[in-house]
Image 1 (cartoon, rainbow, N blue to C red):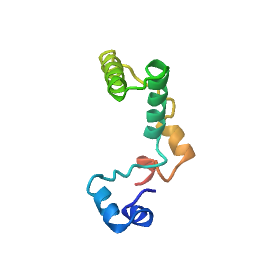
Image 2: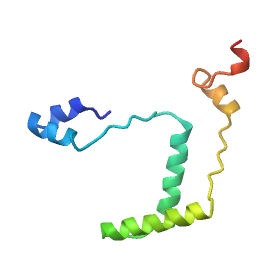
Image 3: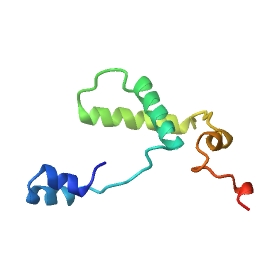
Image 4: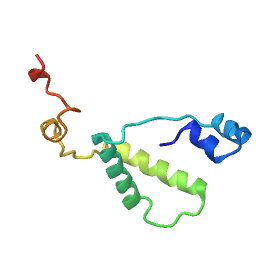
Length: 102
């Protein structure tokens, strides 16, 4: 995991403080179905848009923005197969059944 302490372990204090002023940590779950969907979407991006070398960062941003606009306009979706019932069977503590908690 990334933390402010890791920066202080890697860099001198002044440099660690300088870096920390420029970043913001966003902690997200490591084990969640949404993460799988993100990985699927990144795979689609790679296959449809990043299937060639783009060596100019501005061109890369334009290509990704155009792909994103097209995908959103088409209302593209991921067909997610992992149902709540499957989640409860596999990871019961993370997905409790509200009807059994009475």
